[in-house]
Image (tube, rainbow, N blue to C red; front, side, top):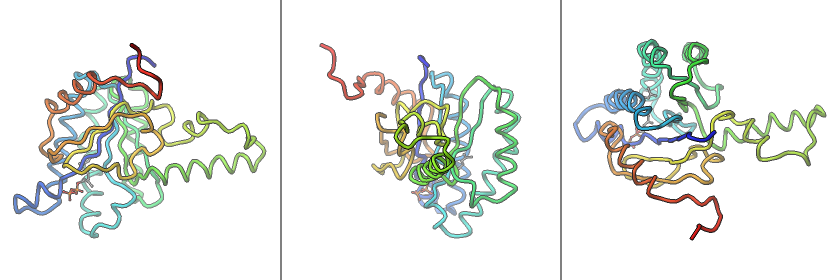
Length: 235
Ligand code: FPP
């Protein structure tokens, strides 16, 4: 669809933001949740149609039990407190990632918010929880292999589109730009399949300090670049 602008964000630096202030790491995450709200509200005004946020990776389970539980509580609280606003602002919310390790109450809230916002045509917001790009590909391959096994699909006829349509991000266009905050220059298993042609931007700002104004500046830089998708540039 023309006119789409999909931004993916690796929201990094909450822990450092808190530690530098002598605060517990969870304070950084709750401040990070305030930034999420600010960015979600500002995104449509910046021309963003799709926003995908990396909230919790398949690797994040290695963190302390206290931090993991705190993050899960934050996700539940965020959905409960912000649902009404998201619905009234016409945001469609999807969650991407595996469902295997998430607690039933959180899964219930996620399913409820997805259903409540299913018909919303404003900002298409995807939140990655228990998400890993390789894990997403493995789950898709398992589904496709099962289809081949059942005789519903011929292995030789498998296409990129078929794979893309089997990923958690089916229906969502590939990201145009991936942003990572906090100075790290890694992609950390985020949208591994989908970012093949994405532009990348790494900024030093810690996620709790990230603003819509900084996002706007990054978009300006992005539009100053020319994307070629492997073709030779014109002129
Ligand atoms: C990375 O910072 C951040 C996370 C692992 C969690 C992201 C979660 C939020 C922004 C909270 C709310 C999200 C939603 C969708 C409501 P880090 O802890 O790795 O920071 P560090 O690298 O400085 O330790």
